[in-house]
Length: 256
Image 1: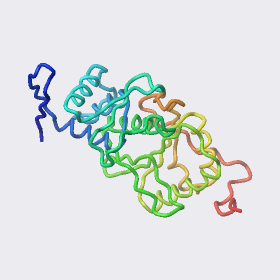
Image 2 (image 1 turned 120 degrees about the horizontal axis):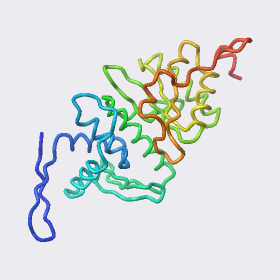
Image 3 (image 1 turned 180 degrees about the horizontal axis):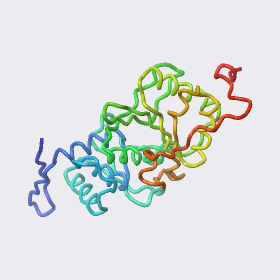
Image 4 (image 1 turned 90 degrees about the horizontal axis):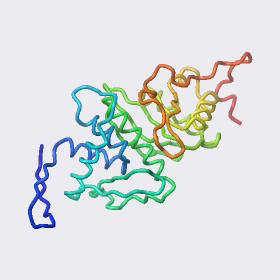
């Protein structure tokens, strides 16, 4: 479905901007991820418009034109935060009605999630927010990627969590992989966060579930994608550590 938006220019002449179904899909995606930088917009535009999956984003100029069109009709807004080289955009018609706070500590993480989400879209996936925690022991992942009826939980980490926090998170991952039908949990993180997340997964996950929790060190500390574009779908994702000679204790043996 297509719509026409009218914008009065400074000289009094009306300019008609066509809002296409792809534009509407992009705006829906922005409402899910809340905000995105231009690199994420480039990848998301690929995912919203392809008959076949591509492995490269649209050009910078094409992304800038899309942003300019949406700004012209007042559907998005943008700013240039100090910690980013380029602009950040967000939808104006959010359900909360609030402008995202680019000075919060979580802003880098939110932009990193949108960067990951955009690359999943370019691979043909659907991206959703994970459901809210059901109990105090439950954990909400950063996103859910769905393709061909199969869903995976995605975690985006710029700094490592504490080992005790990973204990609770990995226990929850194990339950959801077993009971909720997710195919895998993918950590897309900085190298340091990947190493610690996988070390703690080796410690707390059962052997039959552990291979389904993987990691790719594709993010940098700024929240920008710095790894190979295809890394999350490569065969050589960080595997479980090999068992030592003494054997790996059962999960309950490691709990005090």
